[in-house]
Length: 67
Image 1 (tube, rainbow, N blue to C red):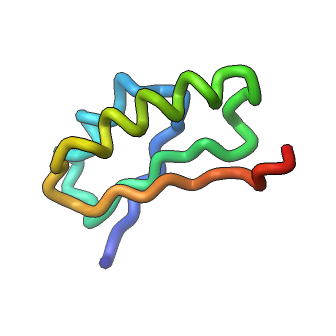
Image 2: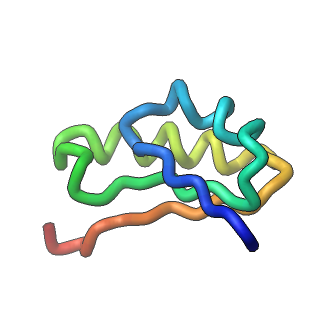
């Protein structure tokens, strides 16, 4: 892979647009920039997005489960 595109996990409106970016893979980011309260809802949206074939690898970056 030559290019990885990080997409903020709290911006599901950008997920589909990112697949057309030309990047070799997407990383949906649920790290520190996403508030803890929103992560539960966003996990569901990310799960729905990743359940559909996107035509490129999609990874999810997460925090420790203890946070």
